[in-house]
Amino acid sequence: MTRRDLLFATVVAAATGWPAVAQEVPKHARIGLMTAGQAFPRRYFDEAMARLGWIEGRNLTVDWRITGTNPEARAQAARELVAARLDAIVAAGIGEARPLRAVSDTVPIVVVAGADLVQSGLARSLARPGGNVTGVTVIQQELDGKRLQLLHELLPSHAALQS
Image 1 (cartoon, rainbow, N blue to C red):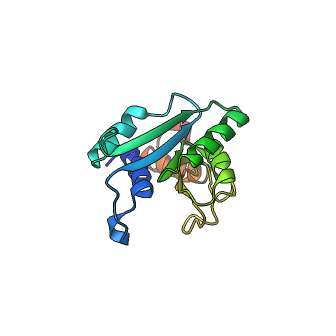
Image 2 (image 1 turned 60 degrees about the vertical axis):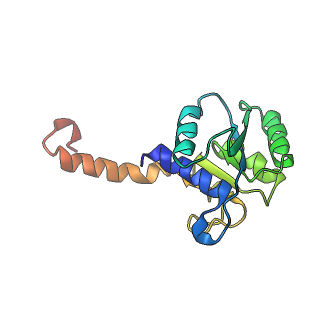
């Protein structure tokens, strides 16, 4: 499973519920997706969902909203998505998640590429987010030292890596 598959599997889990937690999987899932631009990997989303058995137009409806970075456009899209009474809403990042969270504390919101959800105030903790926001947190800075250490171990004689 690739990283993209894992991200989108998270989305599907939030939208449909895992059978292992005794939730009945709906016959037709309705999710929203809010992103700032066209760069969101729609093809990968569709492919990952199809591998999991979810085909748009057959047993899945996706309400896409491309907002740009305009705060009012994001707020309007958030209101529309929440009003649509979807099973879950996917936020491409923190910028999309905040206006969604501002208008709903019940609709599950899944952030697929976020900075620290705890630091941003969208989740209480990584282990137990609480509320209706969850997702993937990418904490790059904390890993930089470890990456450099591994690189140094792999290439100890490389002059550019010497201190």
